[in-house]
Every structure is written in C-alpha cells, then in structure tokens.
Length: 107
Image 1 (cartoon, rainbow, N blue to C red):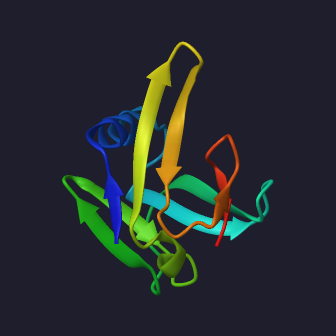
Image 2 (image 1 turned 90 degrees about the vertical axis):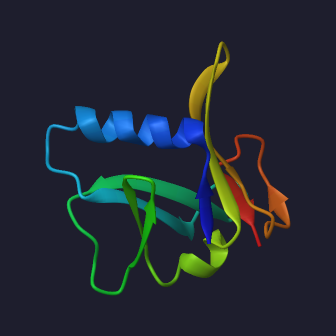
C-alpha cells in the first residue's frame, strides 16, 4: 500500500522520540485542499481509530483512514534534507497532476 524510504523512517523515528506526548504511530492522510485539489497530511497520534488500517513498517506504525487508503496506494514517502530545505516528499503514481512543493496533487 504505502512505502517509506529509509530516510523517511529515520526522520519519523526522530520525531516520535522527541515528542513530549506519548506516540503510538504516525497518521498519513489525504484531505481536500492545497494548490492541486488534494493534500497530504501527517500527524503523530497516540493511537489508531477503530476503522484505520495500521501498517507496520520496521518499528513504525502508520495509521491510514479508509477514505485516504485508496489515494495512498502505491505512494512512496521520502524525507529530503538539503540546502534548499528539508521535509517529506510524496511520490504518487496515481496522481494526474501535482504541485511544485510535492504536498498537493489531483487524482
């Protein structure tokens, strides 16, 4: 369904370890908005919701809601750290259009 690169896994682990509140996993979602119509969201959460798919990637738990799951199928999440900035990048083979920032797309 969803792939995390090694860089993304390391970055997520760092964020979880530095969190001041208990973290059960990372929620990755797709919501309306952004410059291309849909945008990715990420949030550390204490636990999954009952209807969530829970993906276990190495030691990480990823929570995906049922509405976001089809739009995240085949997506690769990477973490880039360069002089231009750092952040997560989503590569979505299902997107028909995406914006320059890589955080918004249309299907």
